[in-house]
Length: 434
Image (cartoon, rainbow, N blue to C red):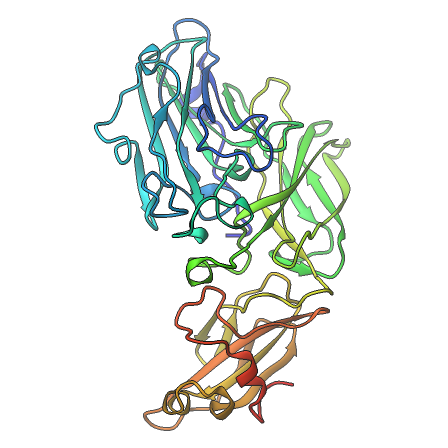
């Protein structure tokens, strides 16, 4: 998931005439390395007038900006330090319906040892009351490592949960939802606020970039924002990094443009012109060889304090001339063509073909098994191959990325199925790519 429209916002058919209003605030004032594990990291507020109660709150991480975040109450999905749902204020004051097992009952949508959805039910969550709680949220890429993970990726802030949809159900039957979005001027906090009434969804694009995700040759880019004429739009640029050194298997289920944590953040508010447009110069940042994954998203800055619908989330990576791409693409065979995923940090690709039987019989001697360079320094993400292996045989294919920093690696990004480094052996093959 790297270019997506997050399904969030007001449900007008169910919210017509409601007086319900509420917010969920996550890790306010905690900084970029804030953690939902800390006491009181989540605050629910009933902002409704008297007589309207909150009856249910549902938080869905499947739409979060960082794509593999889960609730990890048992320490099986992220790092090994875990925390179940923990009330940090009096649950009786809001009538929290407490599950028999706080490590399982509030959670659903199981994924990779954790859960994507948290649901809280209340019997007496009246107006002007608040409820504080905490629990563990982790990215699955750090599965099995000690806390807090590389680059503190196991410390997940509200900022890193941007895009997670918070759904509120009220006693008058209204159901409204909004995405978490960073609090203005706060490096780590995020908030979702709902009130009745329509609110626009802004558009977002990088000028001159036809498709995303992509690795771009220049850090200077222009973001075009669109929405209601004269409207105020808030842009988020968050730089992510994927540090996998020391992780079991070099990281769990690593995706090409995945980030495990945020290392830099910028918020900019602009006013759209009479045509509902604003072109905003930005500088993409890259703070290290595994960093540079710039996430871009926007919301309409609503004067009523609501969290607007989230724009599509764009991901762009500036090319690095100081280091080659640190991972290899993921490949697939479709018909007579080999396809591979775009790779963060790569602008060109090399693909080698080899004889699988020779690889097995030589116990991994790529220098003897590689039979050809299928593609060299290609900007495409596919290459045709009409050749057929001998009867009973099979071909294997491996790809690496290139940038102005040099040729990358043929090693698997996640370490699955690989017993030893490949690059030196492939380079020694007479017919490998130069």
